[in-house]
Length: 141
Length: 396
Image (cartoon, rainbow over all chains, first blue to last red):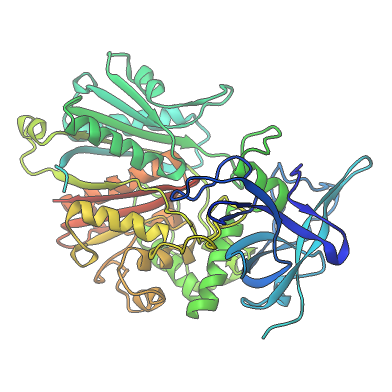
């Protein structure tokens, strides 16, 4: 669905973005056509792996089932899903993602450390759609 | 400073869930605005529609739809889409036509019949659309973003959910005085607290509903206004339609990530602040000159953010301004005396035009029970999906 946004297994799992070879601007979701820094003449856009860990910029949850194109099983009751926006220090970027399934807003505070982990967005008999999740590391300093 | 244009007439169809076509709402608003201006539809040289989706038709239509419904009379026609800022872009286009001499009198119309429940993107598999992606990959509805902003304010500035509730209490009290508003009952903080959480920390009564509605304005050159007996019309002095500056470091709807600031430091002001500053500079006024403000309160917490972005108070001081009563009717700078989106709900192409209607009524001294005494300068502010700025400054 979103080819090339993440790769790797376990501890090697990373979000993938791109970086302009001329100005070093980082893009996530990946920008493969043109550097969006208006003061850059434009360089080659190279794939890079983003930092694995960052700090929680903010968080919330969805207490009601989101509409399509979000896919969920209407036969099952909706379980609130937490979402976390995480600030990556090296890339100076904030990336939104769903929290790992066991994480609720009660587990979160702004500023705590979170790491990216592989997750499942949705699966049916034929297909498993994978995604990234943010999960607090337990480090709050 | 640019030249001014006159607001000759304003009109609205009441907001609500009426179950009718957007055309009906737009025509009703247009006819009300024309009557208010003392003009016949055939006096209008240009019509500008803020776009919506016409059911069953694969496209966004507005200007010509309203022109046909009012009766073809050969007017110049334009349709504009800028999401929530569509109405402001329509006003901006009208102003540009008037100031360039392309038209003397322009009718601007926005109307919509909103679907029930969450807004959602158009159908089909469209992974090249960031709006489609945020729903498909994250299930991130609009309230999810409102929740993120609210939680961030709590962490940064110490705002509480009780503070957010007081914004609803204030706006509901003013909306109760507005016959065009959808919700016309006062709301208590207890009622906000008892409503269901939608996106932590925000509850149902912290978040605006979707609604049907329509709004229209008739704008003209100052010379045309005088010729038609409007000696002292309300005037539009500024329209801000700016885009963000790279890198936009605030997680904006509908994005999955911010721009990275690794190569370029973020600009000294946020996008929302630049929307207001641009309007102030064009109008030659500042926040201290304002009599009132109409802001896009998609959520209660977002209204507090606008206080700061408009320069009504310092950063992080929005709650103090609210608690001091400054933004209530009778306060130093009343905000959303119309009742705001809290009382109206969203009818996307109409809302920025409706804000201008409220400014006009207030500046004429014709706002009835919700009148801001001696109003002379008003600002409207909003932000349209995909980086559309929107602010209008009107004076009398």
